[in-house]
Length: 131
Image (cartoon, rainbow, N blue to C red; front, side):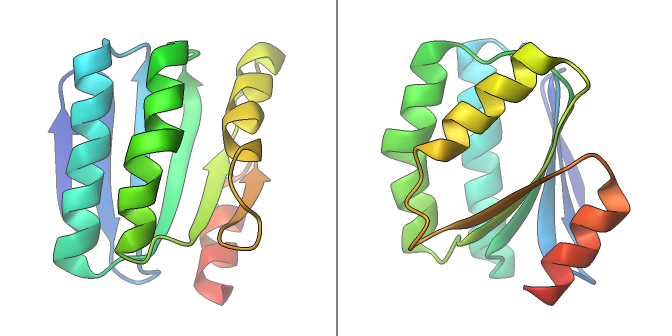
């Protein structure tokens, strides 16, 4: 299992038996670190031919609006071009952060992209294995 840390706020792990990437966000990364983490995920998706992502936001803070926009308008089209189609998202107990995460995901085309929200990592990985 390959794990890469990007700064102090992002850990990316290749989970081969699903297969998927697990992206764990911790706190509020500065914009450059957020984008570096996302781009590292893109690189690993290419390298390992991965189309599914488990995003762990249980320890995350709300990302900057500019970064949310960048994610949906610039990063996502690149990821979809290499096959990214499915995301399981672990939500925190914080209703404000949960709202922000769901708002980011709501901007994605459900015909091109499948996502589901979870509170339990095992349930999320089991779901990703079945998709």
